Length: 99
Image (cartoon, rainbow, N blue to C red; front, side):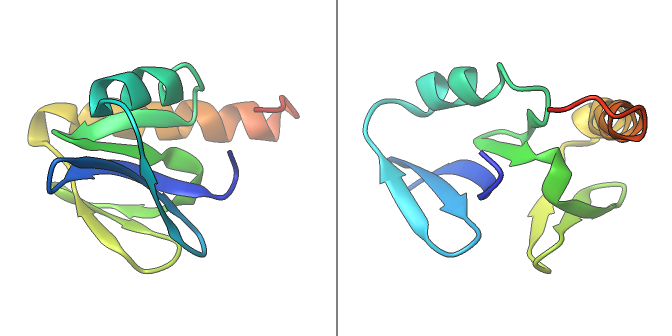
């Protein structure tokens, strides 16, 4: 799970973007999204994109930048939720809670 940067849906294919490669996934993006979203560090930030919040370096008003420098869009509607979840994860890691 720590190798996953984000998952997305493009060209009718669900893909998981790892730190070192891209992995196409069989099944629907909805199924993949549901599976990843059971972990607190994963959430949807835009239609067709589920991010690993542990890999986010910066959050802007309509974008985020991952630790590897990649920039992804963030829905303005979801921006506040993304920020709150990031803060929640940070607070949990400061308290020593494993995720």
